[in-house]
Structure formats: C-alpha cells, structure tokens
Image (tube, rainbow, N blue to C red; front, top):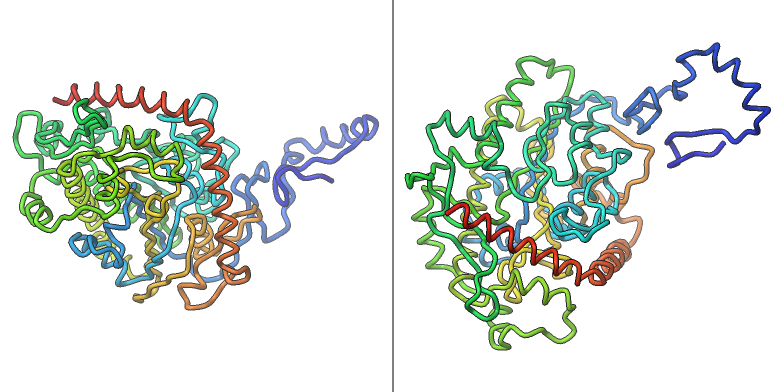
Length: 514
C-alpha cells in the first residue's frame, strides 16, 4: 500500500485489472461505507469522510480558550526593550501581556513579506508562496491551495469554536474552511476602509463620514523632486471634522471580535466547546491613518525623535549602494527610500502613533476577556508577520532582503492558568506558532511540521528545540531563506516593473483621497 502525503493522507492500493474487477462487486455491496477512511480508534480527522488531516488527541484535561492577536509589519523599535526608541512608545496593553507572560526576544519570520510569512505560520511549513499578490511576478503562487491545511482547521475538528476578524492575504478559501462561511477575511495588503459594507455601516451608526488625509507623508524620489509613494498620515472626516478613534478600522475589528465573543458565549456552549479567536489587525503597516486625539503624543514624540545612525551614514554616501549590498535593495530603495531627513522624522513619528492605535484596539479585546472572566484561564499570543526597516539604510517597509529588522517579530505568550513574567532569549521562528497552539490544545497532527512547540520553554524546560543545536537549526532555516532570497533576486527586473505599476496605482489612489 502506498500513501499520498504520508503518513496519514489519502491512500490507495496498487493492483492489476483482474484484482480491481474482483473487488468491484464487494465495493457495490458496501455502498457509501466504502468511502469511509479506516479509524485506528484514537485517530480523528479534519475531514472524517475522506480521511484528510489525521490527528491524535494528547491531553485528557480541559482544552483552554486560545486567542491569537496579530499586527502587521512591526519594527523592533516599537516593542523591544533593547531598542532605545521603544522606551518612548506607549503600548500598555501589549506590555501587560509581556508582564503576564513570556516574551521571546529573538523571534523571526520565515520570509519578510506579508503573504509568504502568513502562509508559513498558518500551515506550520516553509511556504511555496514567495510574494504578495500585488507585487508578485506572473506565475508566482500567492494564495494557499485548497489542499493545504492551516492549523485552525485542526482546532475546529477537535471541537473548538473557531472565529476570525481582519486580514487574511493568503486567499479566502482556507479561512472559510477553518472559520466558517460567515468569515470575512480580506485578501489584500491594505484594509477595505472604503468598500467594507459592514465597516461603513458601523461608521454611519457613529455619525462619522469616511476618512481623508489632512496631512500626508509623500516620499520624494532620489532626485529630490519627483513625488514617490505615499505612506499615509493623519486623517479627518471627508467634511474636515475630526476623525475619532472609535471609527478607526482597527477599533472596528476589535469591537467586531468583542461582539463575536459575546455571541459565542450567549448562543453556544462555552463549557463544552472551547473558543479559538484570531484577531488580525492591519496596522501599524502604512499607509498610516492616525485619528484625532494623538496631537499631544505627536509633540512628545517629535521632541524625542532621532534618526538611525545607518541613515546618517547613507546620507553621507549620497544614498549610493553599499559594497556587497544586493542589487534588489536598489529596487526597493528607489520606491521605499527616504532621502529627506524631515520626511523620515514624520514617518517614524506616525509609525509609533499608529502602533499606539493598535495597542488601544487590542486593549478593547483584552478588557472584554477580563470582563467575561476568560483572561486568566486562556492562552493569549501576540505576534506579527514581519518587521520593518524604519529608516535604517535610508529605507522603510520591508522586502526580499535579509536585514534583521525585517525578519524580527514580536512574540509574546500569556499562558493559561496564571501569570508569569519571563524573557526567553533563545531564537524561535513563527513556524513554532502552530505547534505551540496545537500542543496547548492537546492536538498532535500526523502531518509534518517545520516548527516545534514552545510549551516546554514556557515551563522552563529545554524541549525539542534543544535536541538539535540551536545554531544548526537556525542555520538550516537561514540557508533556506537565503535560497529564497536568491530566487527573488533573480526575478528583480520583473519585480521592478511590478513596483512601478504599484507606484502608479498608489499615486492614483492618493489623488482620489484628496
């Protein structure tokens, strides 16, 4: 007997024609039962009828509620204690998770792009997706395949009530499989602030009109004159009135998550079925959309803001390419380089303010967990899909290059059953996210995963990660990252054309918002 996707995938038996014809009558008599996959007793399936996604339950205790909160494109400047700038960032809700849980200070993504990174941490595998749909060269896959499995599907099959709010960016099919037909994952790089009917109705209920920029951060190309990309900025209502935080899209997502949680607690059986909820916030990714109420914070940040030393060094070189720097970086610097120091100051201030908007939205959801008596007993994780240059080497955003700041991600785990303040400096990967959550839920898939569970680290034990020297484990991952970066480097000319088209589209959108 041979297996497709062993050890637990769809299977078939090799046979000749006579053997097949001899089995046909028995198959006809068996009727529909012939489609049933064999069950080994303690084995369960994501799809019991077809035998897809076999897994075992490893825990006899009560499964905890699990809440995953993600932000998009978070620089270590915004949260890491080793970064001086982080001391000026007011994120009390995220810091409360760090106080109540474990902060992994050396966490990294697999690919510093939205879609590839999300695909890898959702599947727990190094992903074949290597580009975002908006920038990918023709023929490059940008969405998960229907035959892929994302880890929330295991939770759903094990009895969890699975829900999600916010960004998907890996296609919609797998989110519908994992979270149900009422899920609304948007498959784009930016939030649908002008075409999400639910959000627009929510804004109308507040008496708020759609947003427009009152101040906008617009880059200049290297000639210092030609307008470049827009990074967004400060917003007001289209009639010029202040735009309140309550009408912001991040706040809307948090409140939608709160209402989803309340509905589950009222209509389902939370004592019998644990809850898994995934809140995926787009911010602080640009284009920024800073609402009213942050005027004083802006003044404070401007008085404390400095520029990275590597920016000043790039300036002295007239922003020319550094020795041994990959050529692809010149493509990114052309569109995401900042050649004016004041523009970079504006960007870094706005970036921090946007992160503080994110933290305030997260606080709404955490407050609801506490109100419902769920916080202490739940597993709560905060992370991001990738990092951000934030002005280093005269660049912002991220891309297919391997500077540490675009690979670093925040990774905070508040365990169920109490609080613990701990910092783990061992390097970990976003690939470990799925295994950690499934381990906490008492689920052991038969499928292969590329990460390991971090529960032993939470308990102060070495765990599986120590079975292989950490440097070898991370070097292997780094080698794969380099190979993928090299493949992207080979496609740089196509990527440049895509970026030029994206630049033109963004300029058109910017004019439409004015």
